[in-house]
Length: 360
Image 1 (cartoon, one colour):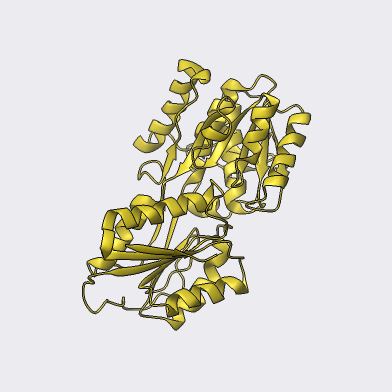
Image 2: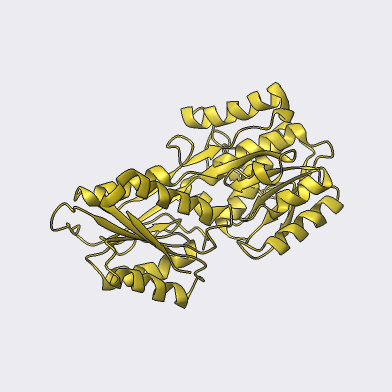
């Protein structure tokens, strides 16, 4: 096995396939070896989003050994540069290319149309082609769990949210967190600071400091570095990790983290390439499928809070609990999800409104 490191991310759209063709391309034969390329929006050392995708890439190498060769390019800007990098990987003889940020969607589509014999997989987008599949995770399910924890653990009722970009995935997560927190503490407020970046440790740290200065005693985030958690550790407040278990950066402050586990998916899809059984699809998985997991709970939470968190997680897996079960209204009081109904995937993937108590 071999890999080469050469040296993002997301707005979610409507989950609808576009431009599909009548027939699916078939590989000529089962392969003795697969070359797989990965395109990353951030550095592999961000300990968040890109780090977890690279953990998945390494798992592919470990699982298949000499049957696979992987490479990656990190710190790829969303836009024209992404198209250039994706095309280079296709021309370099890769059999399959994984592009791991929403902003890579249109460049991936363009390159996939130019290279019909190469398979492509795009994380968090919605456009498919006969040789282009889409995969995503229901991160909002994890925010339901940590919002529940925050409702129990916050003493002030004020919680801070370090947010990347005001796009549907992030808005969805903010609302999921606040809805869960208000079920425990009806007077809770969620203060949001936007850093307009997926990975900028300096801005993330400054945002956390600002929120703590405003009275927030718990900090959560939808950004990729552990900087906000490190501020929590220094200032004596609790926080949640993002994308990976960040406990090592804030041993006392870290309550848990939403963990993205891409490894099983990457192993499965490369295996299908080896077996000549790869085909396009559009999947959105969560706790039930193992794509979303929770890091170990900090014992400081106590048995009662841990049990409450686990009740939500298990309820989602068993189908007895839905994060966006009605009635849900926006801040103007307009009912968005009626009582007895659950928000549709289309609503979630285009969410552009906040629930009561969000200060964004």
